[in-house]
Every structure is written in C-alpha cells, then in structure tokens.
Image 1 (tube, rainbow, N blue to C red):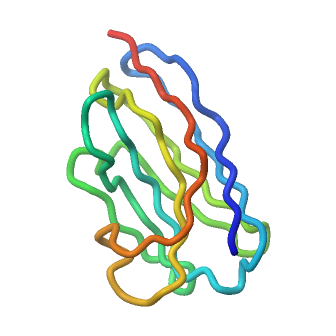
Image 2 (cartoon, rainbow, N blue to C red; image 1 turned 90 degrees about the vertical axis):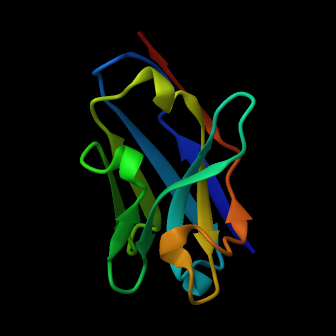
Image 3 (cartoon, one colour; image 1 turned 45 degrees about the vertical axis):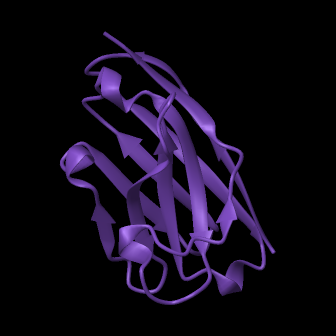
Length: 124
C-alpha cells in the first residue's frame, strides 16, 4: 500500500499562486508515476498533471499548461504542484495520486492510490 497526504490548499484571489504538496509513504518503491487530479463542485474528477517517477517527464492538460508545474523528489518521497495565475475555474478539491503500473500515466489512467484531497478556492 501507498499512503498519500496532501497539504497547501487554501483561498486565493484570481491571479495569485498556491503550492500544493503531497507526502508519499508506504511501498514507495512501487510508485511509477504521480499525478494531480481535481474535482469541482458538481463535476467529475479530472486529470490535471502527472510526472513519471523514473524519467521525470511531465504532462498536463491544456487548461493549466504554462500556469501549473508539477515537480517530484524521489529521495524525499514528495511531489508538489505549483499553481500560478490562478483562475476562479481552478476552484476544486485537488487530489494527489500514485500509479504502480506502467502505461497511461501521462493521461491520468490507472492511478491506484489517492490522498484525501485539499480544497483550493480562487475568488474573482
């Protein structure tokens, strides 16, 4: 099992920045990729961005490209999401997720383990 704990959410004005962190524990050696997802009120959870744990390659959805940056630290078993130029439509609960199987990591597929989520609210 892999355990994930997010932190860093909060309330910010449009145009502002927030940094989310995710601490990884348990069977960390099984992690192949880490991702961030979000779920806005009344909407389904959606993939935001991910990083390959072995190569460091990243991928993000178009709506956050140029604004959000995912980074990972294998040695510290942590992943972060730097969010800049935040918009009201970024308001959601953000989830950290881990993937232990190969393939599909960059498209948000097959993530096995999930954190409890952290609320991000962007006011206009």
